[in-house]
Length: 76
Image 1 (spheres, one colour):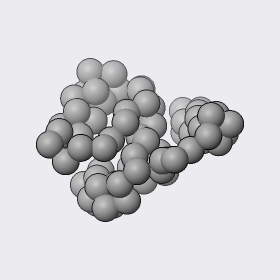
Image 2 (cartoon, rainbow, N blue to C red):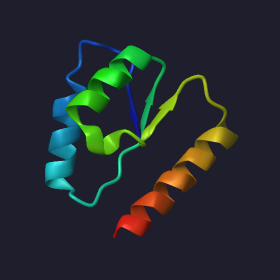
Image 3 (cartoon, rainbow, N blue to C red):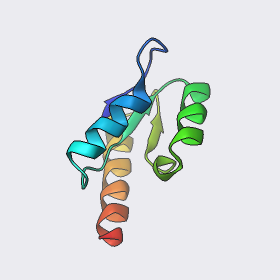
Image 4 (cartoon, helix red, strand yellow):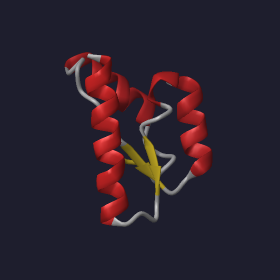
């Protein structure tokens, strides 16, 4: 899980470095910032379904993780 809440960090570079090092890694991005999420989705379209927005309950977060894991397993 990668939490996004600051425009001072280059999240796109972080994402790309993680994927380069760990190709099969599935990354869930948690953010309260819809504009930042839209910007990242434009730059990295393949992660458009891996965002959740704060605030989120633990129960909702678990559902999102389960759904993301299921999508990831179906793609492999």
